[in-house]
Length: 427
Image 1 (spheres, rainbow, N blue to C red):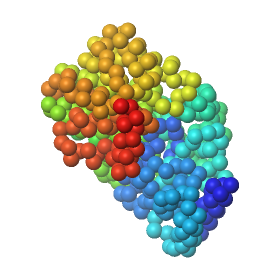
Image 2: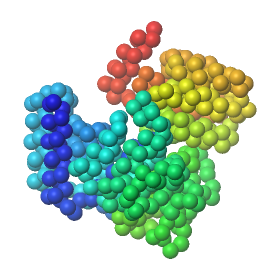
Image 3: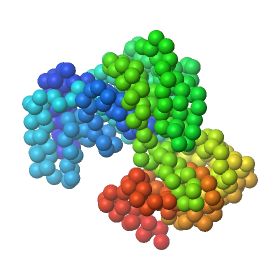
């Protein structure tokens, strides 16, 4: 009851804020995967001209998203009435203060059916970006069609929607009733797209940006890894152009784009190896893209450390087996799994395909094993979910510089204590 009361109050404050400051535009980011990366890249580009407000955390629920929009910290103890009263007071002050931003960027998350639609009861985004539609929270949604209907609900209460043309199946278009949409991606089907000319691990991608606002393609370079990482870049480009940034401002912004921690982030490893840190979270589509990127890179040895994928419900076995099918013994020296589901289904299928496989429940043990077989100039992909997997701790063992620990996800004292307790239970 108290939670519902707090939620309603926060929604009221957000409505009042935009009524008081109609000049402030709202950009929201929804989708099964890639929200935080997309949000961060949009902020990087828009900052070339505009004052941008963005919550650095991944708070995206009906309690935390309003506070992210208003730029107010979530209470340390969400059960404390006094702390919420302080939050309410801060919200009222924020509404009365002159706006300090031109654009607010907020990601919207969902755990159950109807969450995304509910945001539309108090938000009217200027632009909504849908990053992807892939299996998520399948214990609640059951089918990919329901996931698509949930995530695409944001398009129907936004002035303009930008849709990932490459990672959202066209058959889901029937869930969109708002005709004001545009598409982004890396294929010719997208209106806003990046066409690659060259790639290097040091400099990233060089190529051309094609967009309706541009009389001709413009050359650009982006330091990201993996073609799928170019899609959130193009979401940012589309958003920037739609909000009036010039071609030169877009190019300047792209020069500042870097991988977000735990999301296809390249780090130097032991024995002159390259570590691809993709440990923030894991889903079938993300694993497929990460493996494809690994396979495209030349190296004397490739190792894939793959953690169990969470929140897949009844589709978990099938989706993990698909990952096992992607493990190519001709391209991987070792497949190292972390977690029960990965061992049962990824490891078993990878072994059947002829891969060398070792399985662990503990990410530290997985990292130690990878370290023991690591060769000079190897490339190691580390991919995992957060709850109970924590593959960033495997990355930590393989890093060349201990100072790069700070570039990994979930390194706060609170997270480290959570992981310590979890790993103690495995002993």
